[in-house]
Each structure stands twice: as structure tokens, then as C-alpha cells.
Image 1 (cartoon, helix red, strand yellow):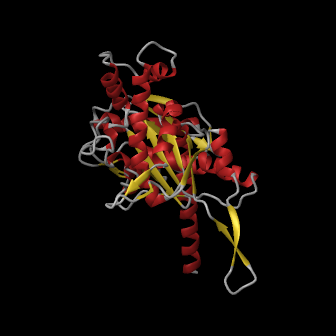
Image 2 (cartoon, one colour):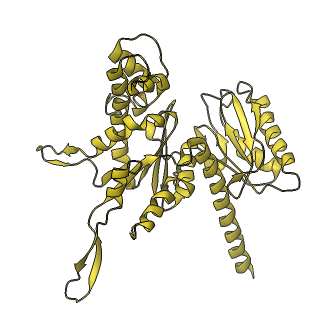
Image 3 (cartoon, rainbow, N blue to C red):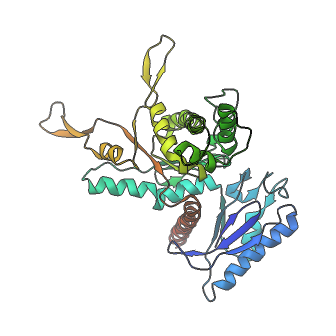
Length: 369
């Protein structure tokens, strides 16, 4: 059973074999009253369980806003759900009521995991297989561009939550455009609106969708200012990603509403990542070690899939060793859609948890015998 938790509505559903098996149930979140809100969550899952008829759910898994102690299912002081203050044991409450494991995680983490399990990552690896190449990718950096700047990290096919349930908080990295601020001030809906207003002199508050139409030449407005709004955001995204790539070394998947403007965003990200950074003596070095390729662009995809594997002689031997002389990182738009990826990530994480639990129980049983 799963839940899409928004500030206005809660949408409940259930998945089996990766597919939604009931009609989603939508209830008002009642986010200003904790007791009513909690009863709404309980009621929603009870309705889902009734809709399953004779089938018994094995777990509850969903995304919920932070800050939170996700590993223990404790929700902290939320902004868009103001009733949650001081630590609310949401996970343990649901486990006690429904008698099944309950997993709660950040939507950025689940987005990245969903794309790693069933989205961009398997798409990349399938293309590599079909091209006869041996290299494979097991890690992924996921970012979402929308009201804010979200992130998640998958390493060796496992979601990285961090020891304090605080991994992937990319919005807190330093802002390359305005260095005394967090990067989210330049990577968000409000940032797109602010830059367009500054560049155009237009005092009207437009939506990112309207600004995108102007940038494409499909609506009246300052086209140059609109393009600048998306490109400035892209530079801020690129610099934050450069720091993440230096540590994680993984492909990048982009989701969120603003990702629809990828034609203006991704080329600028690649341009920045393909640039240089300097030491104190002025010596240039690449901003990121790997080449970055837009796999949604046919030419870039072909370059990404071109064979860079060769063989080198093994010293003091007649044998050879494989050598992949070029490092390559792919970047692309979500293959599942952001909401679907989050839901699929929650589902996959629950399956992973249940598999490991069954394995641990089997090992303990063997040990006791």
C-alpha cells in the first residue's frame, strides 16, 4: 500500500508486480490538525485494504516530506504539513495498526531509486547491451526541478539514505550564481520567475510554463529573458552536480515539472560540466573527469555508446587486459515520470526490505537449528 502525500490532498493506492491494482483514493490532508490528519491517513489505508478484497498487503511504503528520521519512521517539523511538529511517530503508528512493515522515505530518494530500478538506469544498460558493450552502470544521481530542488542517490543498486536520513540534500549545496545562498535560490519555480522579471522588466508574475512558451517563441514576451531564466538555473544545477559527480561518479536523471524545459537546461548543464576549473597558479583542469552525454539527443547517445574499450599488453606476459580509456556519464530526463518513479521507488524499496527480512529470518532459523 502506498501514499502520495501532498499539502492539500493525500492519494492512496496499492501496487502488485509493479502495477497499480486499485483506483486511487483521494482524501483531503487536513494538514493543519494533527489528530484529524493522522485519522485521515489511517482511514485512507483502511479504504485501500478494503479495496483489495481477499488480498492481504505485505507492507506500507510511501514518500513523506522532511525533515524526518526516516529509518525510524519519525516525522519532524514540516513546512507544508504544519500540524507535524516535535516528532510524530507515523511509521510505528501504522505498523501497530496494520501489523505490517511500514517504510517512509524522502521523495527525492524514492525518485532516484524508482529510476534506478525501472527507469533511466536500465534504459542506459539495455542500450549498452544492444551495442555489444561490456560496461554497465549501477549508480544514479536523481534530481527534481520544481517548487524546490530535490535529490536522491543510488549507489551499487542500493538507495543511499545516509546515517542520519539526510543524504541527497542537494538543495543545500552552495549557489554558484549567488555564493552566499543555497543553490535552491537559483533552482526553483521562484528562481525562474525572478530571473525573467529581472531580465525582462515585466512585473507580471508568470508561471514557468508561460516563460517556457515565451522561450520557445510560442507566446508573446521577452524571449531572450525567458531563455536566460532557464539557462541561469541550468548553470546553478550544473555546478552543484559537478560536486556530486566528483564523489558519486554516476549517471544523472532529471525529473520535476521544470524538467519539461530540458531543451534549454540540459545543453547548458553539459556546457558547464565540460568546462574547466583552475588551481591557484592558473592551471586548467576539467570540471568533471568524465565526459557528459545527453542520452535523449540521438547524436549524444551515439557518442555515448561508441566503443572506447581497447586492450593493453600485460607487462612481462603475452596476455592482454581490457582498458576502458574514456570515462562517460549519461544525463537524461525521467523515463517513468516523476510521480510514477516515486511510487515505483517506494514499491521497490518495500520488496527489497521484505526480501532481506525473509533472508535474515532464514539465516536466523538455520543458526537456531
